[in-house]
Image (cartoon, rainbow, N blue to C red; front, side):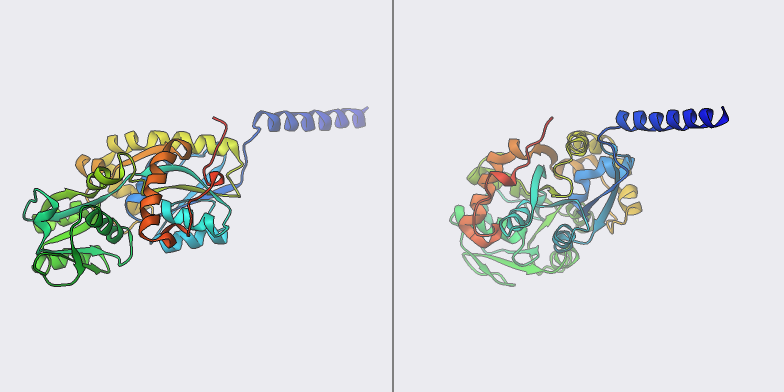
Length: 329
């Protein structure tokens, strides 16, 4: 009799376990790793970074890394399942055969020109020196495309050239700020939140919104700078994807309403930023959310502009339909 009771209890325990497993269908104890570059891109996932909850039943770990080169390595090596990265870098990886998909676009441009003297048109920059960070990077490409489309002559030079805009690259934002402070440059192109820090230190102000200048020549909503990219390890996990997209859709409002805690949350998560965020800073970050499918039209304009300038910037060709993640909402 005792044996029968023991067997019945074991059976009931097994059935209970099976039932509970069925109730959590789609959930997993697997950890999903999300990596983001330090700075504005990290704020594309700020709500998740601040709340530290599960997504679609999955445990999530968010890493803040130093830059985009490390991001590319993270996703190609399999160390990360999800990354925030420049959209043209995502396109390059996809065109090289890396099995990734663009889930959404979340950073719509953070580049601004600061200086002491306001400008009324791009012609006011002739005979001036502009410094920016990262030779061959997004600031340089954006500047050059804007100047080319507006027939503004420019030259690579550390000193002023009559009748032309002198542009020159430096390694870091701190170097750009120093150049303006010492009078070696008239203006600097920087990304938020460094813009806020620079204006505070230098007494300068924003004189040009590069996103607006881009929109005038390429089209509205086409400065699709960075987005969320999923590797093969997760892009078929529809429960996770739905949860992720929901969090991303709520992120910009959450960020704006909780701006006072941004500095502390970022630093506690490994960020090197020491900027005191304001609502104005957050607004200038242009953090939003569009699914890859909804952002496709603007993204193609952005990628086409880069392709016309240098096809290698997007991996030699426009991405096909497989690049854009479609999921069950």
